[in-house]
Image (cartoon, rainbow, N blue to C red):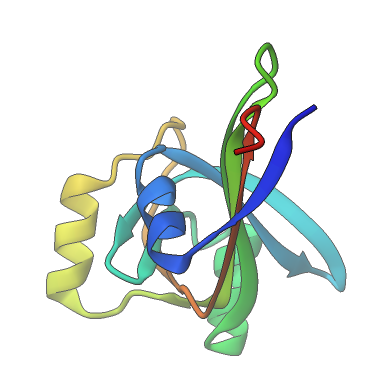
Length: 136
């Protein structure tokens, strides 16, 4: 039987930065919405790209900022081991031209749609768990 261990903030951010894809959870027309996105971690900030017509970007534009959750994990179904990290924070459109250019250069969307905006998510609350087969 596996053991679930809580992870510290620093380790959570390291793990989050070690994978290219996660899921952003936000409110779309008063209902929860979840979208898979590729990301990068820049210090204490998660950065994703989106389309201004998409639900998340539209909500962030309409409100100036938006509270979201971001989750990424790596689980091995065969060994029943892995980890999961959930970040709760404020999502905002990146408007600073130098940051915008830098993120557009290093973060390339995985989908063939136009991704004409960059969204940053502050890592306000960070929680993570490791599932291990070693009880020690």
